[in-house]
Amino acid sequence: MSSPDGKPTTSVGVVGLGYVGLPLAVAFAEEGVDVVGVDYEPRLVAAIEAGESHIEDIPSERLRAVADRISATTDYSRLATCDAVLIAVPTPLTRNREPDLGPLLSSAQALSNVVHAGQLIVLESTTYPGTTREQLVPLLEESGLAAGRDFNVAFSPERVDPGRTDYTLRTTPKIVGGLTPACLERAVALYDLVCDEIVEVSSPEPAELAKLLENVFRSVNIALVNELAMLCDRMGIDIWEVVDAASTKPYGFMRFEPGPGMGGHCLPVDPFYLSWKAREYGQPTEFIELAGEVNQRMPEFCVDRIARALNDHSKPVRGSRVAILGVSYKAGVGDLRESPALKIIQLLGRQGAVISYHDDYVPEVPELGYSSEPFDAVLAECDVAVIVTAHPGLDLERIVATAPLVVDFRGVTRHIEAPNLVRL
Ligand SMILES: NC(=O)c1ccc[n+]([C@@H]2O[C@H](COP(=O)([O-])OP(=O)(O)OC[C@H]3O[C@@H](n4cnc5c(N)ncnc54)[C@H](O)[C@@H]3O)[C@@H](O)[C@H]2O)c1
Image 1 (cartoon, rainbow, N blue to C red):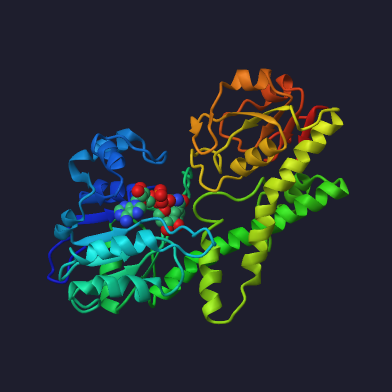
Image 2 (cartoon, helix red, strand yellow):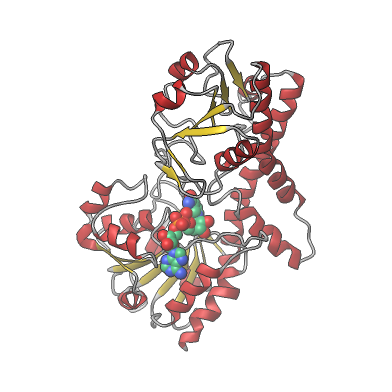
């Protein structure tokens, strides 16, 4: 890649060194680019400087292998020397479920003090259409420089799926939309270093909305299959058998798994960025709202299912020992954000259940005051074992053989027939 003056890009800055930012930083460093990573968490910065990765997809050895090309800091001024800066800070919701652009705006404000002529700034955080142009650009222009004329701006959504190994940053097509054709050209040249295929769109807005379409699509389809799971429970039909059968159709159907509810930083959050923005245009986004409602209801349904299973074993919820297996929001990662397990634990706790949990990926759940207990101990001492998140290698046979009652919300015990086994 080269900057407008024709020089090759030798340094990239990454703001926010989390699930998105750290893999990006490592990918560029692996291509020989010098990377400056900025995060406002001093402990995180110190760990990365010491070669310790906090992201499962980036083993510490991989980080250490490029240690001479990555430096982490809390100091934004270090970005002044970078040819390009990628912003990968969180975009959460407020308590009222409205977009919280706080991290994005404060990082943009800090960048306005360092942005220089010829620099490229790319927003990677998921957000509503218009954010790059309406929110990021005005703050960057407080520098006195003009976006599109003095420096370049683009939006390129991150599509990483934590824990996934079949599609990587390199092999997943990367959507890019620039403020001007020149902005697009520079951003494409940058991502060419780390991605095999770039998908160019006409401006930042379609790129912003494409990412939201992807997430809304998943949210709506997961809600649909979850709603069917609740119906199947009443009708006495096995939802997994239904999904397996429907999935044999070679066209016109895409498989989605039912489960205890949606978690993570993306699906429970991002669609509401779009529904919030849509209100400005007086256009209801009913699919988004409805999918959110159905998915948010799942933990309550799960608790009701556990209560019925206990009842069938002549046990009340109050005083029963419930072993939760897996508390992160998805298999193979330790991310607790918006995890339905937390809601299930809280709801069961309110009903008087005595809860323990085991999760190799999550040593503790500080907000609820729990620590992971040994697998054998939670199984030996429970009245019911509940599979909320089935991490790779979970010994399902042992669970069914040891626990007096097992409730499986992930359908992973489909190959086992046992009288003490209940599935979603
Ligand atoms: N996690 C995913 O799977 C995923 C996938 C695609 C897109 N995204 C999107 O990417 C963005 C980042 O998500 P993430 O999962 O990497 O978040 P994260 O919480 O894992 O990482 C964000 C990092 O930014 C840092 N940070 C926050 N405010 C900052 C500031 N003002 N200055 C510097 N650093 C700051 C935090 O300390 C944290 O380390 C979000 O918009 C998210 O929706 C995430």
